[in-house]
Image 1 (cartoon, rainbow over the protein chains, first blue to last red):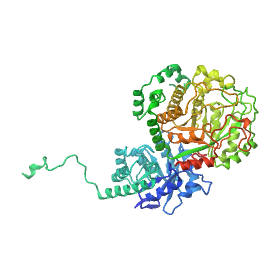
Image 2 (cartoon, rainbow over the protein chains, first blue to last red; image 1 turned 90 degrees about the horizontal axis):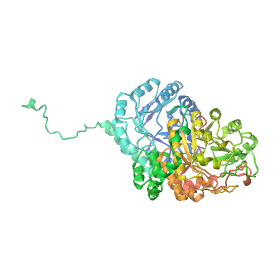
Image 3 (cartoon, rainbow over the protein chains, first blue to last red; image 1 turned 90 degrees about the vertical axis):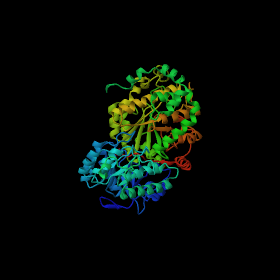
Image 4 (cartoon, each protein chain N blue to C red; image 1 turned 60 degrees about the vertical axis):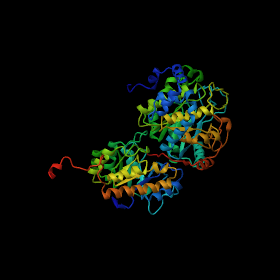
Length: 254
Length: 372
């Protein structure tokens, strides 16, 4: 079981809602993945429309919404968007995304830290999307973040765990749940992050643009479970050669 | 490059005729190297728009489709243009709004805009593009500001395609919620530019060329650029558009960019394009832009036919209009003698969204917000 703030999750797979070819397909894939926390870009939903098609398709007892601030460029804009989200979607959970660079959508650490501090004071459960920067993770912890969400590779790139060395340090040092977000392009990548000891992963593009998103949703569910199970069972050490003898300590047996 | 330098300075080291010759002399080897490069440069782009790339069209299309899918997913953003005025003091040889054309002129009042907005609202649009001719006595930055303030509650994204303005005017428009400005250079060929732009403020090549710099300085979130395809050799024109894009991306790195691909269509005043671009070449160009820049928005208007729009959709197009009227007041009442150009794809937004669905695409009506 994974606990974040006041919620517990049996699934360690978090998902997103972008890029699907229809909202019905999105819903089917999310349900197949058994994900319980689903992020949705505020800019994509019409919060004034009670029949908004995305929100309607996400109404399900097993699904909690995690609004995200994709599109904001500063802490100030993020705080404003968060307050709108809290009012309109009736949740104080927030995936904080401040990526002023629209090309690679890389997060701004300075504005993210500022916004986290302010939002935590305002009572939000803040899940900030960040670079795999171990020091920033500790600063966010002090600022009142509920988790850290370091990236494996740029958003939507499907390139896998490219920040492995830094993620290992973050997982080692963090007092908060570590959710590897962005870049996970295949179930094997998700399993890899979970084997490393990540508390959860967030996957969107790899499911949404798959040939069969529903089957891919299920594949990710299984991979995340397998990875977590392997982590809990403790992996054996990886070695390059077979070791039959002990050349350095053999003298002790003589 | 110092901060006061603009694209006008940057472009001086590129000669139109040299670039044309270089594009013509690209070899298959250049195309293959361009296709193999995962981080393509402007040099690669030159190969991709060259005649040598013609035999690699399917391969280019496959990769363009793959890149678009990965970045944007199975979605197309929809927007609608609202023509505010067809008054224009410019005399652009190819445009229906040319000051010399004897057409009925009209500028929408705020109450007429209300009627248009009511008609557009019923269609479901949340992204609107305000379009106007260049006639500051009737439509200046103050007018656009008033319009933007008036329509702000009804739209999540307000875009503007009007005459070039000053940096502080852009900053003011940004405050009222305008997040996207389109300004098309028409042609980057400075020598021939004046042959098409015979009078009015638009005759000033440099002022127009530096407009995206002014928009970027005003911190507007999104800028649209493009060339008017058909005026000059499209391959060279597109190279300069790509050069401009790469310059802007590095300098105004917080800004999103969009490319438009308007092809000259029949208009009142009957202008014959010197260098028309064929469907096959349009496909090559769309793919070349996508291969150069995975993140760029590419927009295709209703100037294009239904069949062509349907076929090029998967190659890299990310934004489209549907149910458009190019005349001021055209949504509330139809009056085609006022229009800028004639529409080739006459599907209603609902029909268009349905046809997207049949192709496996979700129509996105909203992907922007007032707080952005």
